[in-house]
Image (cartoon, rainbow over all chains, first blue to last red; front, side):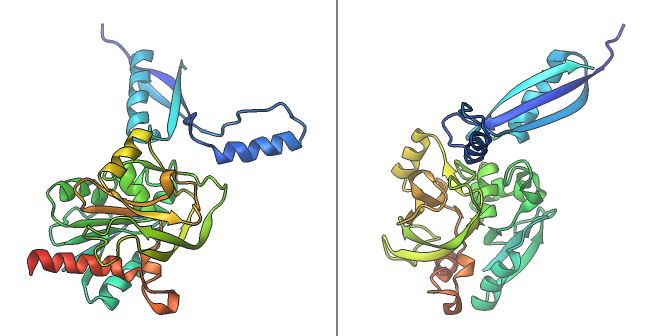
Length: 88
Length: 226
């Protein structure tokens, strides 16, 4: 019996490297403080790339996500990322 | 000498660059559509300023996969000629791996558009030989993602190899590590810089010092081919 591809929802969360000053995060944090969320700290603004894809397994969907993240979606010199994969 | 200025979807400084090369320096210059992959005619390829592919995802992230940019790697390794990346062109060349490092969002939280002072750190290259060592020149910058960044080890290597060609003086407009404004590769045939030399080539627009980067290349071409 051959395996059948299933659909997965992949989410790739991208944020600036911890050692890189994040001006967007800083600007947003100041606004949050001014609006009363005084204890907010270490605010980072990143990106979410999400897509639906067919794969034979969650492992395969994750592996393909790592490949496209490194090829296109992130720049490892300035960014870090995390991947979430959910079967649909 | 023959030059090409690559035109990507969203490039916007290609005409200015062509004007400098063709009208001021009498160099046969083609605007090269980004789908072209034949670079064999050219001694100089310029990746111009602009917002290629809207700078979506990251500046240069999608442009690096454009056919004309994909073939630059072979052109550089085979030492067919020189590659100059200005502003968005610099961002694209780093994303393509033709120059080390990355350009991050300006530390000062804003798009910076002004004239800045720069020091020419290395005049022993095809791009900078018409400058005096440590000469200070003024060029305009216009960018939101110009903060040069790399690991301390990589920055040390750039310094050791004298690959840093331009640094900001007095004021660092984007928070670049080491005030780096322009670098070359190890082979010294690729030069990327955030400032715009093409916008200070005539005294109407300043000192005209930007022209000397292009004149340096013409002289280098003559030295090689006579």
